[in-house]
Length: 257
Length: 288
Picture (cartoon, rainbow over the protein chains, first blue to last red):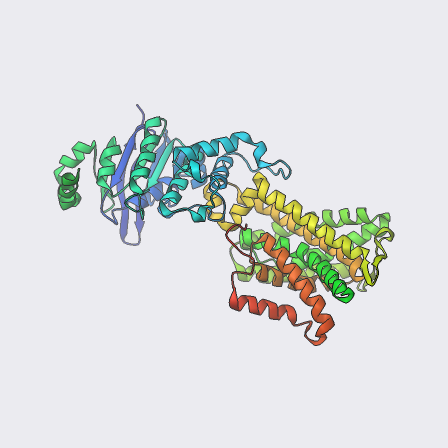
């Protein structure tokens, strides 16, 4: 089967530093893959290349076999490649529902209708509420986004990402900055998205237990290079990976789980 | 008491006219970070073209429509010709829009002549209502009424429609709106044209109020508009209403009680706000 997304020799150079270096990666539709690697391994840069925030120095990205080289981030989103951000990115002074409604209505062209009340667009509101329920924010619909806890903001962000209706989801450290109590619910949210079965998900995370729990496969980035790509057990058993990166962390996590 | 009410009504009416000018300015700034010093030029063009249409047709309503159409058209021209090339560069924006402001003012003199034109209030809005000692000048009440209506319409569009949601979100974080895939340039052009039309509308309403129109009035009111934007909080729509009323009232009361300070009062207000609340008086969590 043709991979839904793949990269060929994907590289980016910042001055003398190759942040992403010749990465050949591919992913099947409906697959759940996690990206791990130490800080500075190029994970977020890799995401930025996929989403179009950054232009590669070399190499190409193919979505369903077609090159994305000339597509902006917006066009990539339209074609089905959506991403969340490492920094919380919601509109602080809008309500939770308004945030998601905006994401839902962003899929259509801007229309200049100054008269029609938004409640008359039932489908938009319903879809927005549905996405919020999916991320367990159904009880916060009318709260102002700035009043949410950090974890809730991350969930809202995921709801907005879901509202963009892209087939591929790039999740950049959804648990970053979260309190320990909040982590299990975000795990639950991501698992429910996975279990719905219609999304291809690429996740950057540091929490190994979460990765092992969710992933169909794991790829390891190290110094910008793709070190390994395989099933969770293959990765865990991979000696290069253990030596290069996991090391102590691996043992520690193994004891925990 | 009657003096107080008169000063109050007077200040409120002036405030509403400034609001029409400032509301566009604040959204233009809030949405695209554009400093538009040519805004006052739309105000004066609205006054002249509106009065021209009013004199030609004999109908004040036609005059208002003429001003609004002129505002829309000039807004479109300004955005396409003057603003688009200087997105993201404040210094260039100030220079080119100030220059364009001068061009607009001088063009007034070319088209309509260099002398001020006297304007009369239409007969059905002329005169006043008298309640004992209190005299309410009809035209002022009319302006105040229009101001609140316009405010209400804009509040509805901003808070209750899809396009309004985009505008509010854009004022908060335009990059994020673009990330969502919304063509904010198109939205901005619309906001710019609407803001320009409001300025032109304000100029038209101003004409019978001040009794005379002249090419330099644009600059005078543009400065008041900027002061209101600063006081009300950049990008805050209801803030601009409150601040415009505040500026209008301060001007009206100061002119009576402390006339030698009346020119300085707005600057003083702005300076105080900048010192103690640089984000503007009326910006709060709910505002867009």
